[in-house]
Image 1 (cartoon, rainbow, N blue to C red):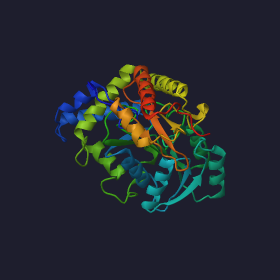
Image 2 (image 1 turned 135 degrees about the vertical axis):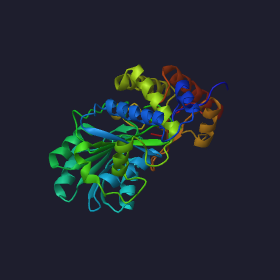
Image 3 (image 1 turned 60 degrees about the vertical axis):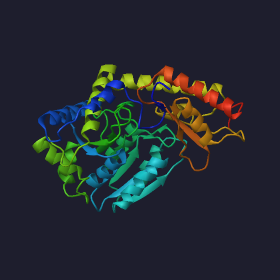
Image 4 (image 1 turned 90 degrees about the vertical axis):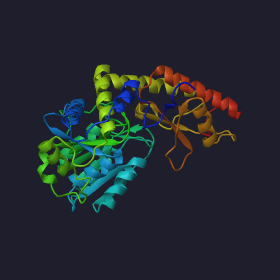
Length: 372
């Protein structure tokens, strides 16, 4: 094969050659040139959501989950109470990390196949005045459903509650505008819709709450308030930054701007999603979600009903043809997932469908239709 496999996952993603080449230079972590890269990157990240007037960006080493944990620990006081509306695996993870940091967490269980019920969230806030914050997963990539960020933000503002948004799989693709909605913290990462490489998260913190965050975190390395104060004072990261990852993300965000920003990226991903779903439907596959609630980020498909289907074989055969798929995240149904994001377009999605068709033939499966 004369190219790397196409990553049809929710991250890491396929990246451009320009992004890969940006990692070939070594940087001094305290050097003025690297500090300038960090500063420019932070500025561009704010621009994605029109947040220069209202928010700051605090970068953090590690995966996106590191930054979710850091955001909750920094923003929520130790006696705070967090409501987590739960319609998927990453909501459950948010609730678990909140509890492990000693914050009280109330989980609001909701159906996996539907967006979060705004009325149910409002009812929960009405019934328990001790709730101080809501953690919302914007795009629940366990299924691919888009949750109603603007409506939840409005409910939180109306009730005077803080809002922490896990925008890991939506930032840069789905519309988020700080001028139209209020959140205390929004978390994303380098290896998602900005099409960088994994290794760095970042949190947008609302300026109005910054002073109140001092001393909340029980972690030295993950205290975002401390990181922000130090970075504003020195231009530097407190601890060794992932220099090559930062450089790659700076290059990726330059390409993001060149492409036309969030609207252009959403258009490309939406076209990828339509191409994928249409092609897979022709092979008999059925998505788990209804079309009207499907975000163009990752699609969960029901597994074929055929007795010969085995995900490990299916995955290996698709991989041999140059495409990496993703296992399902549901507990009650057998599924698999196919991502629509990364530095790919319609051609790659069509090729992926052809690879799946070839895989079915190899496995002796006539149709991808589920047992429904």
